[in-house]
Figure 1 (tube, helix red, strand yellow):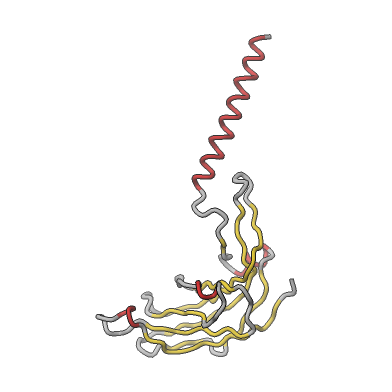
Figure 2 (figure 1 turned 90 degrees about the vertical axis):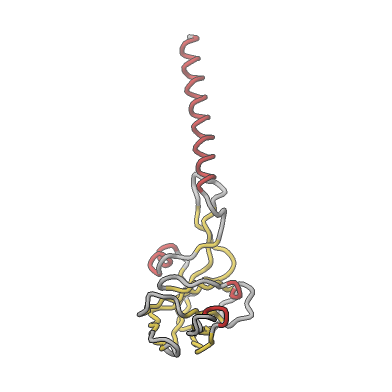
Length: 182
């Protein structure tokens, strides 16, 4: 009888230790706890229930003024802002949060980043919409504008100046075309 109780207690201790160790390792793996996310593509956004609608550009090709570069806008879509709630590390959940993600997808002909796209906004979230990925610009807004304006800036062709004094060369306008009711 003592042997069975010893085996049961030993297994119980192993299970509890395993639970604490896996929980600790899971928490160490999380680099950003409950940080806002953006869907990788429109298909994922629709499947996850975050998709809201699209913007239509008034111009779908941008010819840079200081470089031999074309930027072709392929899609501009909107989704509800969301995060992966990792409060329970073993079963993280996707949750909608305040605000909107606007994703501007494009193709470019040059591998170098010689341009940037920034929203022209007073929106407190939109002001933090920095960064440009290889083929998309991700922006975050508190309120969803019916008309979205994006400033196109180019790296100064003078190598001594470069990005320290970039040149504003264009403004893109996007109109909200279809919006799924929430």
